[in-house]
Length: 379
Image (cartoon, rainbow, N blue to C red; front, side, top):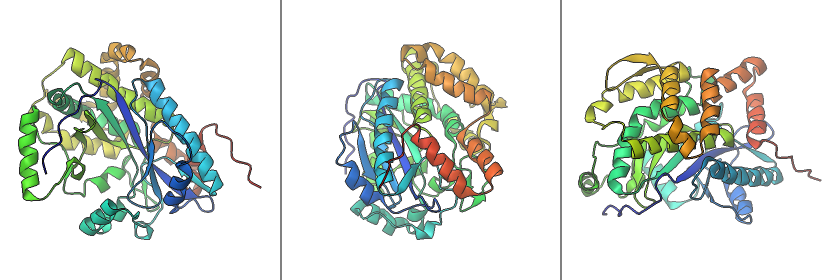
């Protein structure tokens, strides 16, 4: 199969996908209600889409093509509100977070869809362990070569995205000591990790054709890279974010990406090289393990500094671009959380430290996700 042509898209346009948990309201374990939720949601006109995911206790929402933080937040909020009201009718709930804190993977059911059945046959138990929840951010690129250049520039900031979104400290009832344990499940897949170092679409096409010739891949969907090009949309897709606990944070994360991309496209601050990846895996591990307390190794100088300081320094550097894309308020929200050393993983740990019951932590996270949506008064 040949690689699709890279479609035109508006530079710096945004699209956001959120994978969300469906839980019951009895013990707050995962609930296999995706099909019922989809049936209800099809009756509601929405700007984006609501689709199934790998297992039947998951659902994915997405925006349409957006230009700004306010537009992303508006669309996510509209869909969130419809989701929680539909969930109320089913006596279940919707919640964010990168992992469910105590679900047992062997109890999950693969959603009945041909691609999911195919993946289950190929990957075995890893498919059910893929009951993890991430945010994907698409950013529009004016052409294929600029998409690849932006992708590789963005790779230096993967630790930022991981630490700012980390919300998966618990797995199967245990504190993993990771802020983002979710990504450990992704790394188990053979086509995960970093994209190959290609700076032109011609080079990338040669790579893809070689991979397709082996029969290992059929389309870009078969790559689980941290960042991958999406030629059918004319975007690059950043995939390392845990799903945040609120749509407000999800929107803020998306425009942090947009502001960085604006800097890369407009100011051309540096030329990426293969050497950028010498410390890539180490930096990614540090961010997963320690979150905002991680150490960041600069791939250009080899210097070490606290990741928190590197994030704050970067936010200062992109301030002008953030203003130009209307992202100042969102960057301020993220900056404040960094200064407080506060991400969603810390929030979850603090709740567990107080409540000593993960089910109660999830109940509180459910309320946090639904924002101000009033509970349906059921007869």
